[in-house]
Length: 216
Image (cartoon, rainbow, N blue to C red; front, side, top):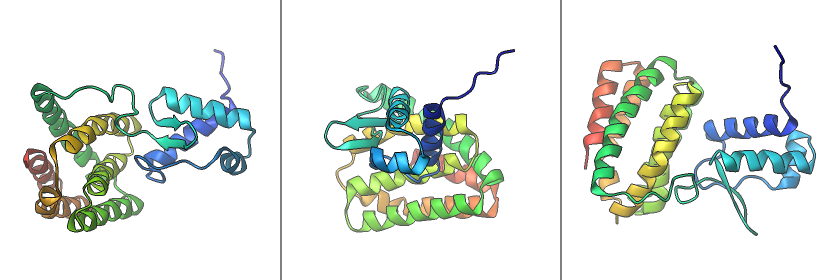
């Protein structure tokens, strides 16, 4: 059997992808410049550019000419231009219910203190932005809270599937919401969900995850 050695670009791409999964960089965040990445990973410019190209092909990041490289937003990701119809929303809700329950089940069993800190941070940002009427920031914090739960499963495939689905959900939220009242009203449910995850209460965590998906 031939063992294929990973290139420097592959290694850098994997490490950047892991940092994004861990929330070091979240949706819409700008990555460090090429010189900064070269210094961080101790590799040449060509390896950094190839690594970024790999992440672009995976739909993880998007290069904006003259601006830099950003963690992919819904309009930048592969397939993110899908036009959501009423039927699409129904299908999305079905997928959300399946995925949310799945990630909650695994997160309850596998969450670490670091995972809990990330979830708490995003949930606090969600609350503050909702209170201040900052819709775009509130939606982003909400997405990152649920992505943090997915990351707490420590199942890369499951987390990636959830992250992909969240891109479509982000598009839908931006389309249907014109204020933060809904997020203010659902804050309590999200706080209860986090408490159940921290407590390892699988039964109530599953119930709350289902309730959140079904909330208007």
